[in-house]
Image (cartoon, rainbow, N blue to C red; front, side, top):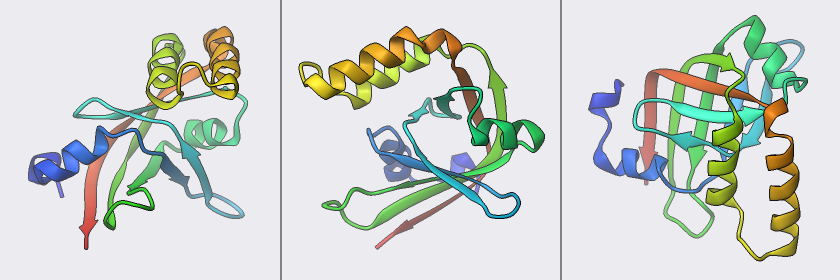
Length: 139
């Protein structure tokens, strides 16, 4: 399915503050990791520290799937995006934006995590996933 074939509900669903699972096939097992993400209407962006296994695997082979699923209290729904990853060093703004999106201000643990992530943002990479196919399911 192409992006222009996705229903409006799927596009709105991707704008929510949900966790996604990035799946990269490899040896000896696939790598599945929950991530914060941003959907800009045409691509998914995540950030990572450059020494993480997902960055190494995506550098060797950029093919990846991202699965975004509904929260427990929501009706069953998911969107899977298959595409190719591009890695660059421009993660600073993305780190700040995702901290604002996923972390509650004034919560001590969230404030500590935000401070650590923002302080180390210059050491992170941005991974942009350019979709090739979409799949979605609603019950």
